[in-house]
Image (cartoon, rainbow, N blue to C red; front, top):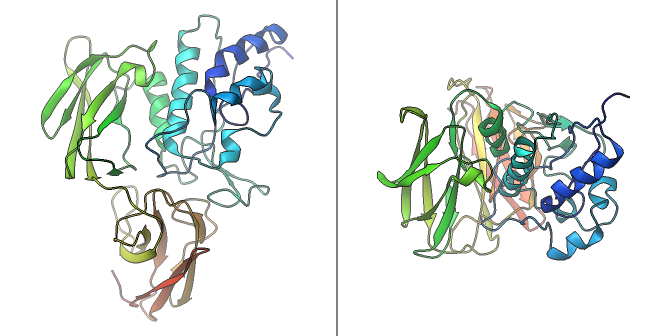
Length: 360
């Protein structure tokens, strides 16, 4: 073998991502011709947390197991076993890894395994059953947040991405400060809240997180508009991104009910194919979405039409875990017979929705 790539799963199967640099140094002693092509962790698209695990992993004690365990994956203390699987943590993990690989002059090469989620016969317990969710995109090719972290480091095409398009409902106290990360590959960037600039910052890949492109933000109750502009070395705007954040100054309670609704589904090109997107929303006893709810839900179908299933994507599985209190599935009416769509979970006996045969 001329070149070797060991598995170093610091921050996933063992320990914390803060051990990655020491893990690499240890591997180099045994494998001088060193590339790295197996690292990272799994994420369930749309799932986020306000306070993800940090560089120490599940706890500071997790780092006590020794750097060697980031390679041999022994022990049971791990983020993987915690079953959080939020995009927020994986963004930090990959950002930490790429900051090292892109600033270490001895790092000869790097590739990401795996680019896309893939089927596996041994993962029935995953948020999407029988799908390994370590990809930067889902099985339909839709990017997760981690995709944009890699793009900020590896793409030559100017780009900016506010974390996150799939985290547009946020909870917290009134006047609570949140940290917003923006992943750009431009020389500088400016973040604005509701049209007011929050300041210009220079990108520096030696800084963590987000190469220093982070801003403290205080959201107002209701809709908040975030926008970013990325500038080249001459001050010209070469990239931009914007999202709307709905902020609720109240912490939701436990799951009390699941509400079903539907709307026209859209393909990635914006064209409808006649399908509907059935959405299940977990709410507490006050009607607030339970953004911390992660239960597995089960969609059922009787009557006409076709319910998507066994596609291995968040909107194509009859069994799927909630992502920030939401699960959705595509349904195609047949124009002949009405359908009844149901959703259940271990904590919820069932909600049912009648879909007319000609629903649009």
